[in-house]
Image 1 (spheres, rainbow, N blue to C red):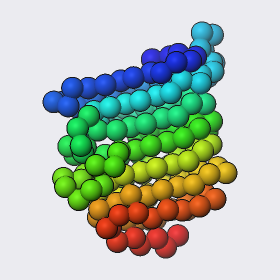
Image 2: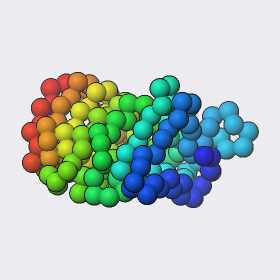
Image 3: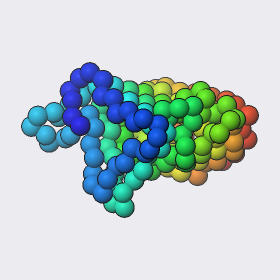
Length: 171
């Protein structure tokens, strides 16, 4: 799905996962494309679960913001962004929403690598930071109702730790 501006909404019904099939999927702009090689679109993916095919990958390329949120109050299963590549010009990233970290049915979120040119906000049950997470000239806010662990660097102007979770940040 390519667009140079405007909002790109991919919204499920809350009854089944959004499937990223066995291919590379690009949303926003595609480098080298003769049609859309830049985008300022806001990208919003809303569904209770994302499912990945065996060799699937998702590229979210925009200078706008990106939000991956559940359709209902919480993701219905654990969410991993490890298969997602975010372009370095994404101006803000939100994973989950406030009800995703309120202690009632909160799913785990595993964060893959992301270098975002703005703030990063993550809501979930247990949070695992398994690759470098960077908010250039901005803040990272982690909202958790479960344990938060880190195995890779976090780089930001400020780090907010919110919720009832236990935060073990050692890298």
